[in-house]
Image 1 (cartoon, one colour):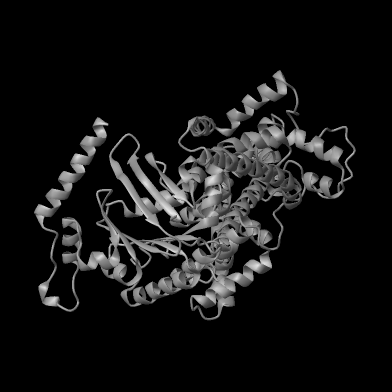
Image 2 (tube, each protein chain N blue to C red):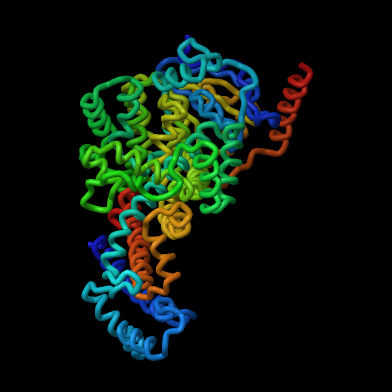
Length: 336
Length: 289
């Protein structure tokens, strides 16, 4: 079956990509200045101290040997031990992953809702003032990067009208009954809407900051392809059947127009995940991105490696999912 | 009383060139009227105006389109859509682009029955199967579950014809329904439309540039030039003795299979000049008043 073959080929290329990422990150962070030992020792430490600590972490061995040891561990699911926290990297990284995933998916959903609404409204009232206003708003949303939107939102909803929390993932004094780190998801499952509301109040601004630029891209592209689709013959035929404009847009045009947008959303979503690094820092949100910055500051080499590998897995995974979704939405690709 | 009556319909590009110049024509119940003319003569434009699908760049400047006695141009948009959807239907030109690629065939035939006319899904599905058999599609159940890309062009045109007749409309606009098809399929499709029209007693506005098709299918004929009706007559009279010089030239220009040696006869320059003078005179009168 061609579908399985496509999947196999994709998994193979994914493995090669990840291997390349592993090599690059391992050597680059060892070539750049700064080393973890210097960060750990107090000023005035002797050469002996440095040598002893280096040996403890295996940093005295040749670089290629270190790489061999690390890769051998990774193959067995052991990503090493964080130098700063002395905990297994895999545990640390997987512990933070849910927070970042929830934030990114929340941002993606917001972007799709905002962008979709802009595109549909703009198409419904195309050629008029409403469409012009939407184009202007899109242009503004697109020309400001996500972290600046973050600052704007903090000023608006954190300072002027303090309706959302500006820092953290959840109010620290709350008693959390969760067994997983997917707090948002688990609070819904457990029907703890009080906790859910608190989580959303924390997540809202960072998610919105990440969502605004993506929403603008979705809005622009989807409106463009909707307007092109509205001139096609099958849409005209649907009009003669007695359908109104809104119905024609939603039923006849939307699904066909969504295809090019979907591919783009996949690519842009990976950028959005990249954006979480700065946004999480800005909002002190305890996710992977925040951890990545701490790891870099402390030169925690195994932790940096682990985080980068995990980000690479997420990126390739998202691309794979988009390709599969594309086949579902476009019946013409199904028996190709 | 004719079912469709177009009175002095003028249409133009917004603030620009006129596309239809005071067109009048009638189609009685169960009658087939051909609309012929060169490319750009405005024949498709008439069909689009009747079905309410003129592009937004085009505006109606005067006239009436009476569908079963009610002027469509005076109805509010929502009511106009409903009336057109209930009484009229379109057989489009290109079967390859007129079906939605992401919906199955079944819903594309039954959607108006269920959504606009309020049929039950079961009744609509039964009706779709019946129609597909009527247009001689083998294995209707399989076809109803198919996507358009899985079917041939001829098959898709049959589906579009079936779909046009689904709600038993009183009027069908066929917009060059055989032009995009293979020559071998054209004849079958033409026969099919003529047969369906007779059985269902539907009035048909048949847009074509092929006088051969007109002689086979139509009873009445309007000849258009530059958005003006130059001749409105019965098909029998037209082929016996066209009255307007342009119509006569058009008839003479039709290639004859019986006499291939004669070659293609273009419409003479003098005839074109004369009919263009008529159009210019019309525009002068319109400008003054």
